[in-house]
Image (cartoon, rainbow, N blue to C red; front, side, top):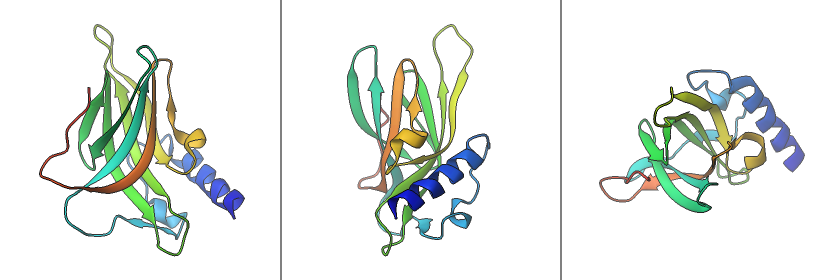
Length: 147
């Protein structure tokens, strides 16, 4: 069962990494659905590692907006979760751009990241690592960005 889920995830990642806008991931995996309605803004819980400072930080990125981690601008286009009858998983479509001072911006990642299989689709850069932990709803009026 886990092998089939990983194979499905790999097919979805391989087919969507080059895309600029999030394709409908639900067409490839019927267990995925939008985050259920509820109070609070939908957010993706992320974990970032700054390899220069060895600092690991968990932070939230609101769906439809951009947040920062170091010199990275992380934009979340969509966030999906598995249906209750499937194993728990969160999938987010992220675009990550590096804005190093004095250098042109560089797109490091654009595609779906899977919380259950970070080795398939996490950002592994020379300076930063970023991975999805979960899709949830933020309690409160705003979601802080991270530096």
